[in-house]
Every structure is written in structure tokens, then in C-alpha cells.
Amino acid sequence: MEVTLLIKATDNAFKMMEEAREQATGILDAAVDFTAEMRHIHNKRVHTIFRSTYETRHRTQNFIVTSVLLFVFWVVLSGRFDGFHLAFGAFCSLLVARMSFDLLFANIRIGDHWLVMVRFLAYIPWHIYQIFKANIYVAYLTLSPKPSIDPGIVKFKTKLETDISWVILAHSITLTPGTITMDIRDGEFYVHALDKRMAQDLNTGEMEDRVAHIFMEADHMYVQDALDVAHIYGEIQ
Image 1 (cartoon, rainbow, N blue to C red):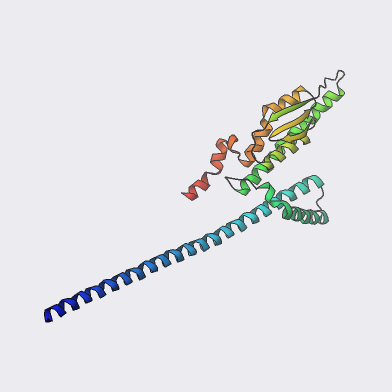
Image 2: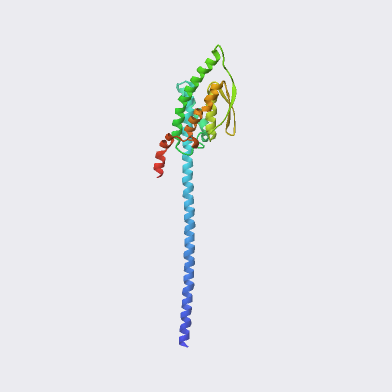
């Protein structure tokens, strides 16, 4: 009898220990799940904070660089360097940049904003030189005893990928005497050229390549592009 009671007591003790073990395991599992969930929430909050900080920094850089570029254009085009015109130009540049600062750098994928700005500023003297040459050529066509003007419409498919690149190329063509960008449809440019030579100049694609170089378009990757952004990949590694 005593042996039977002892066996039952032992069985009950083992059952209680098993139930306690299962309960402890359940508590530990719940604690692990809770910890993992808290870690996920924490990581999500940290990611949101860093993303918000990055977006704020990105937008601030866009605004500053756009303002600088607009102010440079204002000074060059106005030709006035007194305090009133400079202050008014700065105000207008900041106002326009505030409304449109996401346009210029909306599609930059590699490199940084200052590199794009430097390349854009370097593009301006080259384009001014093209305008100067085109002016002389148009004057020659107009004043020649036997004018050889042969106007026509040139259509070409651009390799540029972004809207801002299209805008820069279209305005560059229009600002160059003898050519006018008439329309852009799905990446196809329709340009009125004064004669065949100007049409051939468009087909060489030099202006298109230089615009692509400013924004580092994928189809126009130069060796210089890789050199300019090499420090970025070094920092990432």
C-alpha cells in the first residue's frame, strides 16, 4: 500500500514538473516572440528616422544647388552688379527654387549634386561658344550673294532618359541660332534646321552627349564619370 502511494506521488510529482516545464517553455517562447516584435518595431522606427533625415538632407541640397544655379544665371543675363539687382536676383532665385527645386535633381542616380552643378556650369561656356559659331554661320547664310538656305525638319530619337535632360537639350538646341526645337514626343525630337549642315550637326549627337555627361546618364557613361564617383564607392566599401 505504501509503495503504491509512493509511486502515485512520484507520478504526480513528475506530471507537475512536466506541466511546469511546458508552462516555462511557453513563457520563454512568448518572451522571445515579444522581444523579436519589439526589435522589429525598433528597427522600423530607426529606419524611418534615418530615411526622414536623408530625405530632408536631399531636399535641402536640391534647394541650395538650384538656388545657386538660378542666381548665377540671373547675374549673367542681367549684367547688373549693384546691390539692388543682386539682392532682387537672390530673392527671385530663392523663390523659384522653393517652387521647383525637385525638378533639376529629380533623377540623379549616382554622383552628387555638386558634381552635377560643376558639370552644368562647365557646359555653359561650351554652349556659348556654339551659339557664337552658329551666329556667324547664320549671318554668312543671310548675307551671302547666293543664299544656300535649305530649311527642313529633323527628327531623331534621343538616348537621354530623364525629363530634365530632355529640357536642357531642347533649350540648348533652341538657343543655338538656326535650330528650333518644335516638339518632343516619347523621346523623339522634332527640330527645324535652317540648312543641311545644321541638321548634320544635330545628328552627330555631340550636344546630346554633353547633356548626358552632366547628369551621368547610363547610356553615356564616360571614363571620367567613373573617376568622379570613385570616392563614393570607396566610402561605401
